[in-house]
Image 1 (tube, chains in turn yellow, green):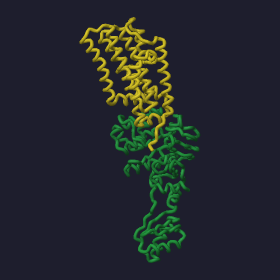
Image 2: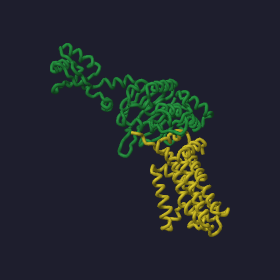
Image 3: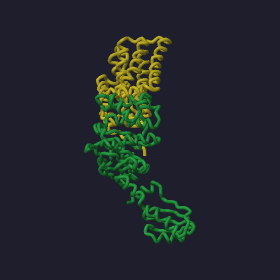
Image 4: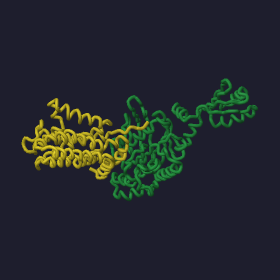
Length: 237
Length: 303
C-alpha cells in the first residue's frame, strides 16, 4: 500500500460526481428500509428478505461496479495512469492501494447503509452484524473483481453490468449449480452463519464460501497487479 | 552517464509494423527524434518509456531492461504527449505527489525546485484542469523532473506551444543537456530539432533512416535530386543551356513548362539564374516540385 496512491485515488474517485451518486444510492437503500418500516409491519423474516433482495442482489453488485471500475478505469481510459506507471512503484502496490480505496468506499456507502437499513427494519444486533459481515464480503469481492476487469478490458462497465444483471439475478435463480459461483450466495452463507438460525439460507456451505471469498480476493488482487505490469499504453499514431 | 539503447527492435500491432528493426544508441546530450507523422516516433518513445514491450529485440537503459522494470524510473523522467493528468489536483499537489511516489526524502522541497525550473511557481496553486496547453506541458515537465532524472524523454513537447513557451523549453532542455543528462525528444519539424539537438535520429515509416548532427541531416535533406518546373520566356533555349552543365541530371519539355531534375541542390540554385541571364532568357516561374517533408524523408529511406 502506498499512501500517495490511496490519496490520489480517493480524490479522483470521490472528488467528482461519483461521490454524489454513491451517497444517493446509500440514501436510497436506507430510504427503502424507512418506507417499509413506516408503511407495513415488518417481521424479522421480512427484514431479512428485503435486505437480501435489495442490498445483496442489487446494491452491492452495483456499488462494487462503481467503485471497482472507478478506482482505475478512468485513468486507463484517458491515459493519466502514466503518472503512476512512470514511477518506481510496484504494480502490485498500485493495485492494492486502489483496492483499499474501493473497499473503503464500499464500507462507507454500502456496508454501513446496509447495517443501518437493518437497524431501521428492527433487526436484532446479531442480524445487523450478520448482514454487515455479508455485505463486506460481497463488497470486497465485487470491488476486486471489477478492478481486475477494468485492467483486463476497456469494456469493464458493460461486462460488469451484464454480470451483475445476468449472472447474479437470472442464471443463479434458474441454474442451481451456478449458485456455487455466485458472490451473492457466498455472502449470504457468511450472513446465515452469524444471523439467528433459519433466518437466512444460502446454497453454499460456509467453509466453501469463506474459501472462495478469500481465494478470489487474494488471486484477483495478485492477478490484477501482474496484468497492470504488462498494461500497454497505445501510441497515438 | 546514461545510455538508452534499442537493439534490433521491432514492434507491430496486428498486421501493422510500427517500428521495424531499429537499432539506436542515445547517449548524454540532446537527441532529436525526427520523422513525419505516423513514422513510429511515439511508438519508439513508448518503447523507451517502458509502456510497450518490443515485439522483438531489446530496449535497455544502461544495460537494464526497461519493460516490466519499474525501478528504471528512478533514472527516467517522461513527458508524455497526451494531456490527460489529474485535472482535479493543483500543479503543486501533482508535483508533490510525483516526488512522494519517487520516495524522495523531502518531497516538498523537490517539488518547489521542479516548479521553479519550469517557471510554474506563480501558477502552482491553480488546478491543472484550468491550465493552458503550454502550462500543462510545463507541469508535466515539473512532474517528470522532480526526481532529477539522468534521462528525460519528451514526446512532441513543442506541440501547442507559443513562441515564448517554446523558447523557454528550449533553454530548459539545453541546460539539462549541458549538465550531461540524456534528453530525447520527438518532433516532425526539422527546424525545431535542428535548433536544439546536437544529435538527430531520423525515422521514416517505422525504419531508421539517418542519423548525425544537424549539419549532416541538413545536407542529406538538401543535397539530393530536386525536381523543378520552370516557366520562362524561352524554355527551349534554357533547356539546352542547362543540359550543358553537370548539375543538371535531366531536362524535359512538357507543353509550356520545362521540367528539370537537378542533381545537386546548392549548385543548381546558383547555376539557374546565371545560365538564364547568359542565354538572355527571362525566368517567369521556378517551382520546386517535391519539397514536401514526406518526399525528403522518403529520399532518405531510399538511400
